[in-house]
Length: 390
Picture 1 (cartoon, rainbow, N blue to C red):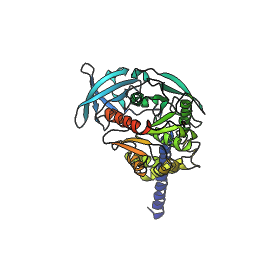
Picture 2 (picture 1 turned 180 degrees about the vertical axis):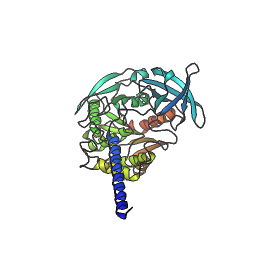
Picture 3 (picture 1 turned 135 degrees about the vertical axis):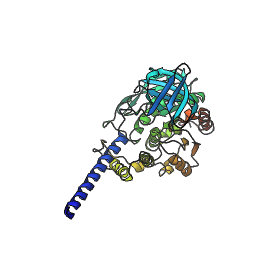
Picture 4 (picture 1 turned 90 degrees about the horizontal axis):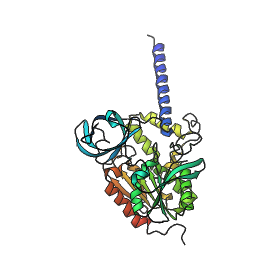
């Protein structure tokens, strides 16, 4: 074989590799901002014993963590509550099967682990109502759970990426005990609220507008002291609202559960966990941030990652923040929260967990989670003068 043929073969292979890497980078970039249509059922159900009230699952980092959790099955049509961890070995875990809310789990073989325990406010056995929040895209549905007694203290719950307002139901009891009315909102592209023009996530850079609309709703319905609580991407969204909305002047405090503080840190972590080559990861980040590539990845506008970095922007924050994060999060690393708390010890209190998984701190240790929020409300938020008072 001649040197020319060899050189040509090498060049062709290099082009093919580069092309494949480029296509992979585009797919990765699109996956970051595209709402998922299919949920990954990555939990294997090995046995169900309804009489004994037990379920045996393949062991994973999630299924072997103590606490109580949700298990979706039958492609999301079925839902069960899974409780105490009874025993486990290297491959299997046996847990209490607490109850089944929907479907027939006896024949289920795969499912999806989640932190939800309550599906609707009806599960809390407290009065609630469906309301609509007027946004720039239309009316976004929300749940309003009033406090036991008339109050001007409100909390607005902002859920995370690829989930819905049910995520925040776990926080309703602790806030209601503190005298707060809870507003659990939907926002663009979450499947409940009106979609954005491009139907893609902006990672908080546009979703904050719907949080601003929720603040306006609360204000117009008597709220004078408002707490924002953001879960995961909802944390990034809340932080955007704090620095971009004039209505953030009405916000007295912020609670962030497993929040995204800096998207670049998070996406690099997730790419590494997925085994993606660093070149593909970096190319995907470049595509997301490039005005020229916005249409290629399906977005109307590029992502400004610098504006989403609240370690770098910590000096702009003026509202007290309670951070709840676990070092064993597994999806959004806690280093962003740790760094933010170190940058602003005057403003930020970090409640650092050790073994809880992503957005599952309540599930892992409900007592500690509730106590942390209650104490912070009692010592930081409630003693403060409601916004708008002279």
